[in-house]
Every structure is written in C-alpha cells, then in structure tokens.
Image (cartoon, rainbow over the protein chains, first blue to last red):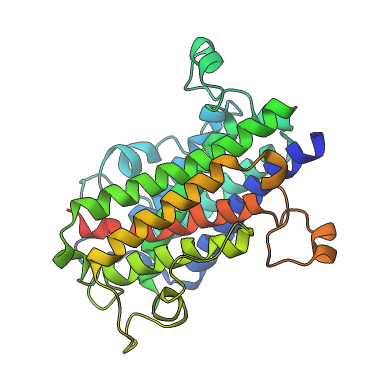
Length: 161
Length: 161
C-alpha cells in the first residue's frame, strides 16, 4: 500500500518534470527575438507565456505552503493583466534566469515532501472545507499545474515548424 | 493508506474528466464549419485535432487492456498521417458521435477499475520490463493522455476570441 502511494506521487511528479523539461527545451531552442513575437498573429507573445508560466509556478510556493514567491513582481504583469497591458515586463533573458531559479527551488522542496505531505491541504482551502474536500491537497495543485503547463506548451509549439 | 490510494486515483480521474468536459464544451460551442477550419493559419484543422483526440482516446481500450477500439479506422487518418494527407476523413458531425461513444464507454470502464487495477501494467510493456519500471501502469496512461488533451485544448482555444 505504502509503495503504491509512493509510486503514484512519483508518477505525478515525473509528469510535471517531463513537461517542464520539454518546455525548457523549447525555450532554449528559440532565440530571444522569436520568443518576443506573438505565438500566432493577434495572440499572446512568447514573452507573456514565458512570464505567465514562471509567475504561476512561483505562486506555488505560498499555495503549497513551502515558502514565499521569489519574484512577486511578476504577478501583476503576467497573471492579473493581459499581454496588451502597458506594464513593463522583464526581458526574455531575465525570464530565463527566473525560470531556472523558480524550478530549481521548487524541485528541491518537491523532492523532500513525503506522501502524507503531498496529501495535506494547500493554503487556499480552509481546514473545514478540506475535511469535506480532501482532494484539495498539494498533489492536486501539481496535477493542475502540469495540465496548465501542457495547455500553454501546446500553444508555444506553434513557434516550431 | 488505502484511502490515500483511492484519493490519488480519484484525483487523476477527476483531472481527466475535467479536461474532457472543457474540451467537449468548446467543441459544442463551435459550429461544424468553424471546426473544419485551421486552428491558426497553416496549422491543423479543428477536424484533425477532434479526430486525433478521439483516435488517441479510442486506442486506450487496447492499451489499457479493457477492450477493442470502437473506431479503428480513425488511426490511419488521425494518428499515422498528418492533416494534409489525402485520406478521407469523417465529418465533424460523425466525430461528435464518435467522441460521445468513446468517452461514454471509457468512463464506464474507468469507474469500475480498482486502485490495484489502475496500477497494473498497460499492454505496451512486457512483464519483465514492468518489474523494473512499475510506473508503466494504466494510471500513467491516464496521466499522460490528460496532458496530451490539455496540450491540444490549448491550441483549440485559439478558435475562441
């Protein structure tokens, strides 16, 4: 039973890491000037999607209760506001650094969490609600973020031929 | 422990069902004529992505060892060949029917599988390899297909304003 638990958590983590690696590989292959362009005409730029993913993943620290955001300044420009806002955005070069820092720190935490800890509530749900809705746990955040990543990775794939 | 197992399987299933529902809702909102168009200029049509998702999900029956494909004829046009092949494709109207049939039948099976059954090997891995790689189980197929769905759903979202 306990082995099954560990296996399932590992599988969810592996899926997250695999998608992170694919997205990182794509960003690495693309020059900054291309990432600055719209993914398809009239849609979000690669810069916006890049910053959006970093900001959403950075927000996992407080949501999972494992720390503070490394780059809280990203929230306004990349989560609250759309690409077309007048807000100043960091360069692709800076985003590459942020991406590395956020995922390196997340990975360190993720590797230390036990199965029980993965199944503890995330911070956006109250103790009372969690009793009724035990699926609102850390593991669900990871599942959900992996799918969110896959969603935008599908869009970023339009940068390639 | 056993409760934790069930909870984790339920969470993976819930994520699958949530993405299916979102994609179904999008296809339902779009008229056939729009789905027949390219998602973005020069890229796959909605018809191709629709058929591709149905075909990939239909292939889960044999891959999970729970039955035969309902529409084996879709594989050639929607998996093996790209959109631009000369192969005849079913209409969007037909694909809507196939989508319903495949997911209804899959859902019936999924709701009956126990945790142990979810953690049994899928049919594309040998008994010997499975001993060394126990993550190559049915649950991993479901995780992987959910992310694949999210990937293409991100592209289909370009149909919307």
